[in-house]
Image (tube, rainbow, N blue to C red; front, side, top):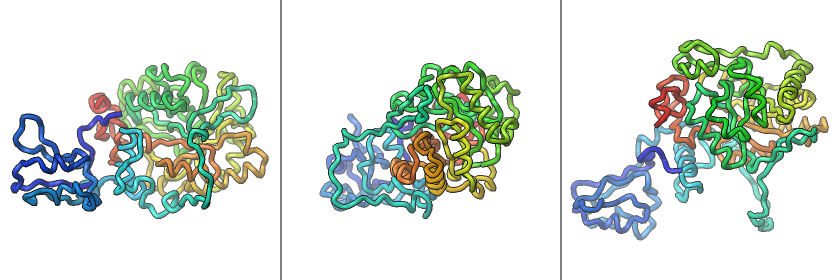
Length: 433
């Protein structure tokens, strides 16, 4: 998918001094298209910095700096690039994700460390170790499909083509074009995306077979009709970024269309209760799941929980309550509105929770009867592989989807006009960028 923006944030800055005689040697030499002269122009165009592979090009015969007869070219690190991202989502990882989203292929550049971040822990510390002398496997013999119904209970036997699907982001927290693009992508990959807790916009209906509708504590936009139109319904009991806290949509993001969908008053901040006040036991939990199964006899039920110390007990309880999918959301999960005390100090890191839940389900003899899905820190294909190695069947991605839509990780998700890319905005002008 071509980028919506003319230029990416370049890692390197290519400067051309006044000594340039516009001979065009650089344009003839560079195979990456950094230098060009527009037809009918005598002067060289401004260098397209983001296409430059940087200092590693010194070893090539076509290195433009060395080829220039007047020494008019120089390459340096771009200080703006260093401000992009953070320890978990480094500038290289963000850039690599953008390239893969645009081209469909991993970056060819060797100067981008896009598979791991710089946090020093979690998936960044784990490495995949492959056995020596392993047999060569034909990639066409490998299946990435996973079944989502392992209970053999007569409900739909749903199989997705890739072990990953999109996370819940509600209408209001993100723009409508963002939700539609996520659903369109899910249909192309034969997987799913989730509505989040803000209702089910009509524009998603063409993608009903690839949409999970979410039922959260605020019950915003939840109707029998929306439950009946989908193949999977998800209960959101907790979120990894803010366990024990309900959803929060700030007033300036609650526009007229958002308020209509949520049956609320425009401009008011919307809070979801901390718990479901009808669920205080496993028996109540089972009644909750039975309610959905009664409304939609074909739907699978997913249960999304955070990762407290007893997450293994929670997972087993959800199995006995009748859930088909147990979705555990770790402490690295993204959010547009959560206090720092919650984001940084409550939920267990997902890499610990996966193994804990996987092993306990095995001990209970229930592991093969449920699908275990992990989220909250899955950024790349390498992270996904590590999560599966630890015991998950698949993963849910949220922030990674946002970055693939060219999110720059500015951290302004909570405000209406704050998202410079229009991804997490309810402002109609920004949303249509």
